[in-house]
Length: 174
Image (cartoon, rainbow, N blue to C red; front, side):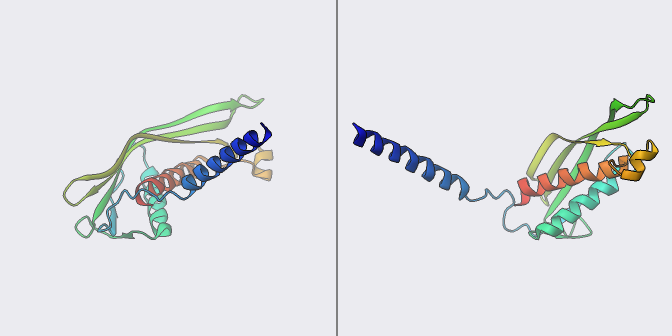
């Protein structure tokens, strides 16, 4: 009986090991075809003034760091076009301090993002993608400014767009 239990437990351990190895070593699924080498980042569509440049900077930085694609200046030069439409920009206060001032916020941005080739074929897209960042407002009160335990809305915007760009490159470009 002990021998059967030993063999059974070894079999279970070996099975678990083999399953985990195949999971860890599975090849990445390539979304972008190999012929796509150049990308153009189209101006971002949004009703929120000033955030489009931060999004463009974040996605271009991530494309450069990834190294799979090169950036071009016009749609005509590009093999694929990055298109983003910001559908929602919400800054919501979460916590108020003793003086009834807002001290912590949640910034939430929702966007439709797609990669479209020259023939207008959608290579990759995600609708209603939402990223958020919770942050403490350092512009309120002298203690926060001294110890810098928070950030401004502008820096929170950058943090959210960095999340967007890392996700898009990881999912679509690999």
